[in-house]
Length: 215
Ligand SMILES: C[S@@+](CC[C@H](N)C(=O)[O-])C[C@H]1O[C@@H](n2cnc3c(N)ncnc32)[C@H](O)[C@@H]1O
Image (spheres, rainbow, N blue to C red):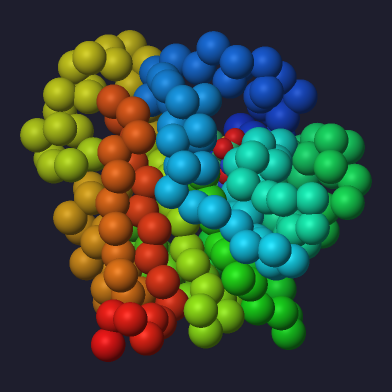
């Protein structure tokens, strides 16, 4: 059975102080976490003086990797514990409690919205709304990058379940690439591109609008 948002919040509040240590040697569906982050960085080059929002920022690893010295970093997370850890490590970040569907950000738009290993936490029936929310928060030439535990097909999910064995998490519902591709297009994203970054990880990059060169 899937976890409720309340359970997810409690899980990450409890995990917050030991989360970074766990990820030094990630296992289960997060196996290859560090390599996937590094791979995703290769596909997104952040321009100067950009404003970037990381949804499900956790302790800030992805935002930190992607941003430059002059990037204005904003982050939201469902867990106060994670926000606390992130703020300690990155005092300059603008952080607040918020979710994919309700980031609680008014009056700002972002050149980049990024998210790592969080989207699968969004209830499948809320995924289109979550992506529409992200679409609305992007500048006209803005870019979305989602890195997560995802699988190419239902068969790949079963294969993953077999190889991960006892560390497979039945409370999570990992997106299927083709299905999420459709949801991104329904939410009006353009130029959707996919890259597999690890045995159980994919990254997708998409634009708010069609660029001049695509027209
Ligand atoms: C596996 S951690 C990933 C953290 C970080 N992005 C990273 O790559 O290390 C998932 C994060 O998403 C947060 N989270 C879970 N569900 C969320 C939601 N619906 N909206 C925003 N954050 C959420 C959790 O509190 C946690 O910090």
